[in-house]
Length: 102
View 1: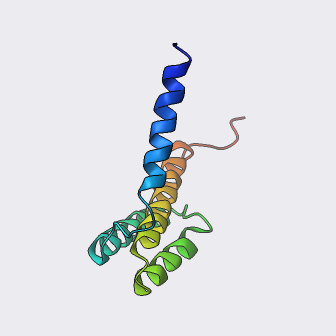
View 2 (view 1 turned 135 degrees about the horizontal axis):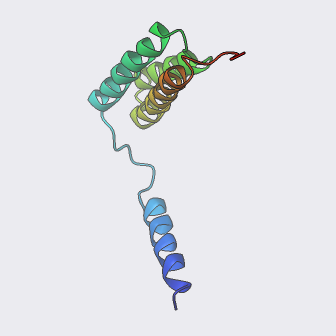
């Protein structure tokens, strides 16, 4: 019984995700806000000199998706770019004293 419960929970979440269908759940305002937040985070990473290679490309893709009315894709891409920027900031902070210690 104990092994069945996690499986049932996982199956319920999977079926729930499939049931949402392809309807757009995000609006133009959602996409604009997500893109703006990603741009702010990206500029913070750039100021630290540690912006990751693909972050700018992902932001451009998010902007293009928003212009095409694909708001769910735009939000997803903007969130990915923001997450990359946050990770880049954390990396820069954790490695600011890195170097050879002779």
